[in-house]
Length: 276
Image (cartoon, rainbow, N blue to C red; front, side, top):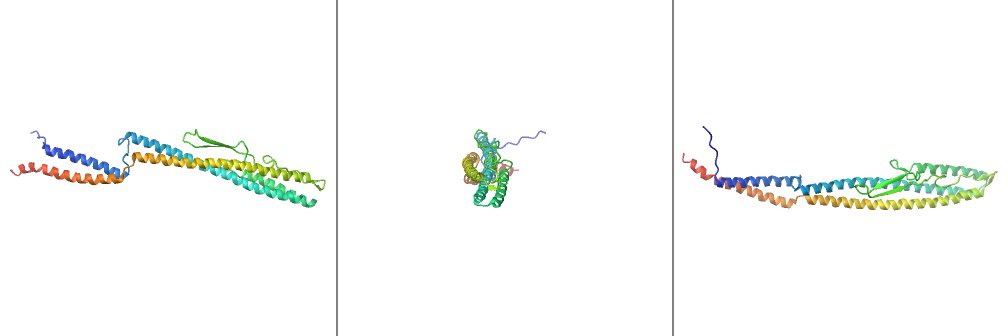
């Protein structure tokens, strides 16, 4: 004997469809409240979802560039620290040369030995002023390029300079003694070269400061762009929690009313059952 299909009354079917719709909306609202987003996948809103993903990806790329800029800033600071220390050594060397002008032969010999030691320390200082393998005091062959945008089309290139004593700063190590007597020409030449070296370092320090200002400005701009992109992505996908909370209360009320209505619609069928 074939089973007869269950037939619902029109009232019961209408109430059931309404209740199913309410339950579906409840699930959607619960998901939004749980995740804080109104667009969780491309199925929710393809245009908003993929636009937000593009914003987030660009923000991530810019964040990576911002990290590169931070490393470039440290490289410049390292070079500038080296310049400041070399300036201190140059001042010490000038003091030795100035003292030699009024010293006797033995004193000049001792001062010249100390002067040579200072020149060696300038070379060491120049060699030790690198950061993560990049040394802007190692010569013009050193070039550091900092990219600012995600594609690398916007960038800043910086060339290093030679800060070694004899080759880069053109200091002189000519002997201060000539046949046992002080060579004032050599001493005064050393003093003049030291003054010129200070001017050279001042110029190079100014270049570093200018490049540092550019990179710092780009860092601030990049952070601003990252914030704009993230805010844009959030505006496309984030849910209004106040609105979703109100929707939840309304849907829960509708669900309760739908259940009651379905129960009332089924009472007619139940009254027939009582006849048996």
